[in-house]
Image (cartoon, rainbow, N blue to C red):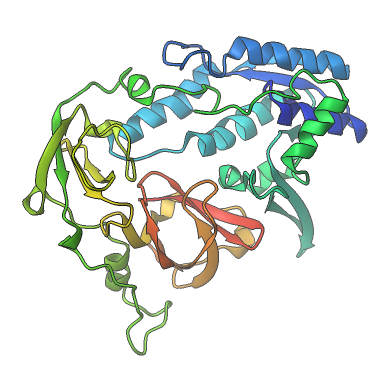
Length: 396
């Protein structure tokens, strides 16, 4: 069962599966009904479902529409509202894959008698035997500009066992060429943007559906409020023996307060903003671009800094609570007291950067080799071994 979104990637995936000899069922998922927050016909579901149907007819495969809108609102949208209200920055695309495409969709496929589910993600998988057990690996897509392994960083072995990624070994231009040669209506269609299954939205208006405007103050933090220094292990200490208080100090967010700042404007609700945001502050007359350094939704305050190299925007570490630590490769899981060196990223398309992961009872401490910009609570941190995605966690 292949998820036909009405885009070129899933269309080409369906064709390739049929060519490989699979009995293919095409399914369009409708998960959103409220179009009041969409920006001028971006990602209209009617057009997408029609395109998906036309692709299925062209390929000669059965086509169904499944409506997961009620579960989508509970699992994705309500979660988003709650996270923003708490001053955190959720990633709905990661959740969509975990909760919808590889849970609701997978279960529906099994009910329909399908053996596997397939999507148009730019990622790959392989497997090997270890101690009599099949281990599945989630690998980066061959097209480095389109690699979507980050969005799948919450999948588990059971989900990977049933997943196929037919276009993961291809470059985007090759995918379009396949669709062109087969005369698929989606061949020249632009890639969708915005929230998973919703489209491009006016985020403030979307959030205002449940989060009401609330006027508060914007504060500017001076550049000299802190000196950012690279953490160095004390003499005689290793990552496995270092005091937890030292780790906590490294991963702690910058200490910001109105006492060390200057009021420069007002906003309509701290829950509408996120760390690293530049647009929407509406404060003029500054010599450098202004960025959000932190939000305090309890006090309804926004702290900002000037310039993308502001020390309040950078940090060498982050923390993931134990309950939020997820390993795709359970056989490689770090136990409390263990540490390891991995490549990592804190957002989609960010170049991989080296980090040391230190596991303790409370959770996972992550210390980067180089300072990271705009580490936002609520986002997903993912770690890798070269091309393989090993695990992820929600930043505390």
